[in-house]
Image 1 (spheres, rainbow, N blue to C red):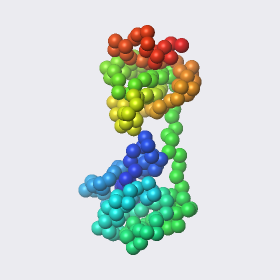
Image 2: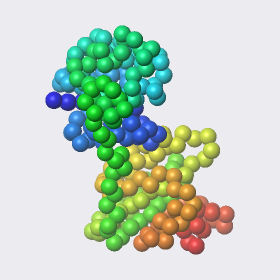
Image 3: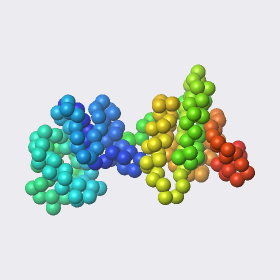
Image 4: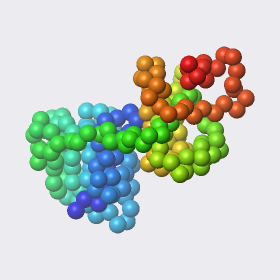
Length: 228
């Protein structure tokens, strides 16, 4: 019985394998643990899910050392074939059971991967879009928005932009962490919508929520995009 999903791939904003791991853990109702692998005391059968071609050799060596120390104490899900140069130190040599994420992976039972894109319920008649610089979060204003919409069935879509040089994935994760407690499953992270996609989304929305503390001015192009 798998009671934990473990991987070096945990950043869902930049990695498809991480998205798969995140969904797999949620479907199984178990925690997702990243590197370094430190499991809760009640974990007995972790599933190690990795795509080795996307992992630096130094980390692969660390994984092999961990696997040798925990021989036959974990399951292994490979998203690609293990390179031959791993030799006797291959991860699969230590796993109690091996799965392959597709038929091209020769070892283990061949599985398949479901879509990593969750089904977004955008059916509510009230559809709100908010967009702008992700680091300029007016939390109190969003809390007030949630209270105003409390008696409605609604969906809030968030598109985030950022200044050049900032870490996109870190900002996206921080933005979701701030807004998810306020809106729950009514929040839908749209990522970084390009202009055409943002324009189409605006035209199909009920309203656009934007909060500029002292920023409604002649050269605020974000504001004028919504008004237009």
